[in-house]
Image (cartoon, rainbow, N blue to C red; front, side, top):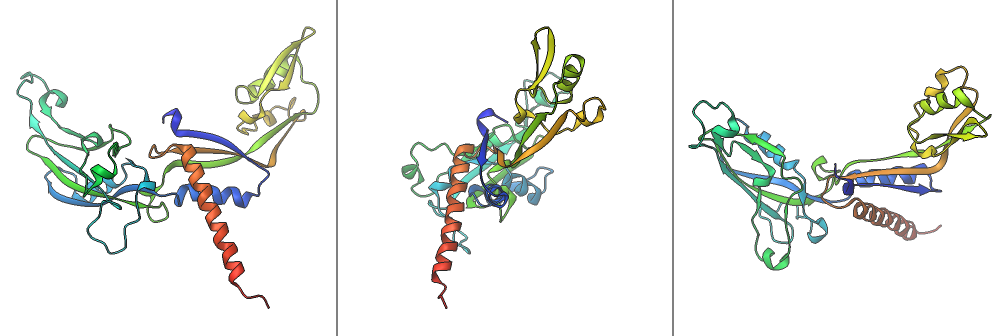
Length: 292
């Protein structure tokens, strides 16, 4: 995971239902582009057509879904406004330069590993004019799709469409979206010397700080946010009555990890828009109900 694909932020003063609705929207209702149809022209690898199509479908595609429309149900042929087309055409052959005594497939064969980098965008209609600066491609170049041996080849055409995770997990824009309550750690009595050092070891690094005050080692809570609630402190009879562990009930720490299709901050803003739209539709429904 790249650092730019992860985001942590706080939601304060809200109900748990709102926090969970936001999490579920991130998982299942923010749209992305993914491979939906695979046209197999030739596949002589050991990977069956169905398995190959499934593997291709799960490769995240770097394409902004906001640039495309949903494909109409029943449409067999895609158009430039609702479909991205990719081609994967590769054939394995022997390497004539390989040493005779070599047994390393990387030396013996050419194109024996099929990676996501071999997928190339094939523009549909006037897409070159619609997206002159576009670089539609898989998010990662090193996803292994299949392995080949001399004479084997794969020749497929893929159609990517816009969809949501509620329909299929391949459309989910996040690797994970979770939240936790902010920890609240209180020292009920001063903790000094050896007890202070033991207390520090009971928590995650950075949670408890040991200061030297007037020749004594004194423990203090430095950053409760870093705590993982291991409850290790309660295993020690000398410490368990000196500390109170709690959680701030309306303070949520959200962690969003993008698959790389869109930056996590964009995913959060899109999820907020969807949540606002749901609220507005609910209000419109209430307004349309006749009052008795």
